[in-house]
View (cartoon, rainbow, N blue to C red):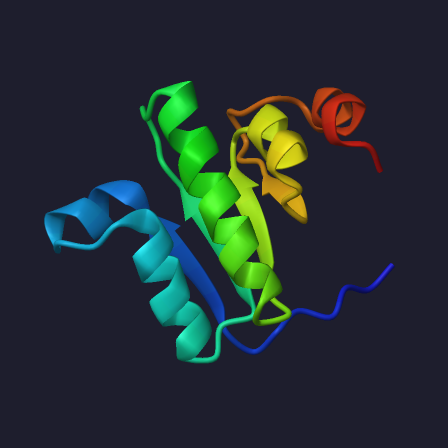
Length: 104
């Protein structure tokens, strides 16, 4: 099964954004303005309510660009926000469990 990925895949890291004076939604919008059509939202250690709000805002902005959002590690947040998917690393939630949360 092949997957067509956009030519620019941007990662919005909440910690890096804050260190450089950006909000997560504004940095994502800047990436969308620059041509990114797939953004990965990464916020290790962020409280659930905070990442929920960021993700809702980024998904809303993405829709205006025909872009997609994937959420790092948080299948629950991805599903609730309507994100396109979840990015899982080797030490994260097992794929089978993530699929039960977000679907196929």
